Length: 340
Image 1 (cartoon, rainbow, N blue to C red):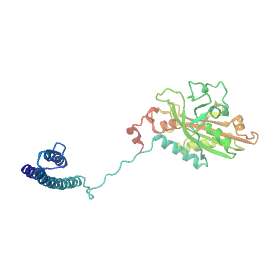
Image 2 (image 1 turned 30 degrees about the horizontal axis):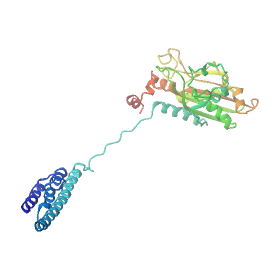
Image 3 (image 1 turned 90 degrees about the vertical axis):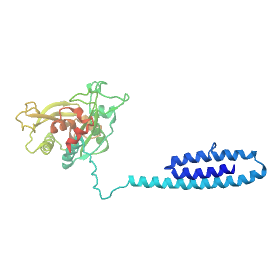
């Protein structure tokens, strides 16, 4: 049995010298010291020896076991150090190598357009106010003088959450919230998302963006409205831009109008963008209806105001020559990166 112990010790030395990594070293440990290992089997067989032999053999076995454990510890440390050195070499960073410039993102064309429009009005003294996208029926329809049988109230046109709560169909509810919170003079714009039950196609989307404007003070007239929007058009589309106001109807303004600008592609001569007319419709506007002013508790004999609203997508499509509104929402970086 002592000869077996000496043989196991020599084999352990030989095998550990050949081991290349932790896995091979662990395999040797299990083979020698595991539950079914060679040294373990010898120790279990010592019960058959006489007391004298058991004492002598036990001392030698413990010594062999201790030496093998020490060799294993040294080998594990050596293979770990070698593996770490190899990893450091493979992961070494060459600090002299030129760096890689990170790829910069770009602003979305709708964001660019909204910021350009907002900047024009802010330069005129307008402040930006915002409101929730989930609105009450009162703010979205009732307070804006929409009759109970107005077509926009139908479930085929509006996303209702409950009977009294909906996704706003326009940014005009911010107009109501502003009148309820702020006293004249009022001069604000409210950019944001709106929602309507539209089937997506090249010119329609169930989600879109609007910028609403509101001015309320003493002595505000239609001339102020026309001057403001004419100045806006010239700053956004160019100093030679002309505006044309056409009579229209909106529940919350009276009188109401739609505004056309001379085509900024052809200068009014007629082209594909303006469909040969020389004019492009860009927004709706009008003098704030007295019923809307009354919601804010204002004296309609003292205060008047005007409001306007324009679709951001429509302006962006016209400005950048985009012929399908769905391109704005598909997150195709090939499309978005064109606006660097």
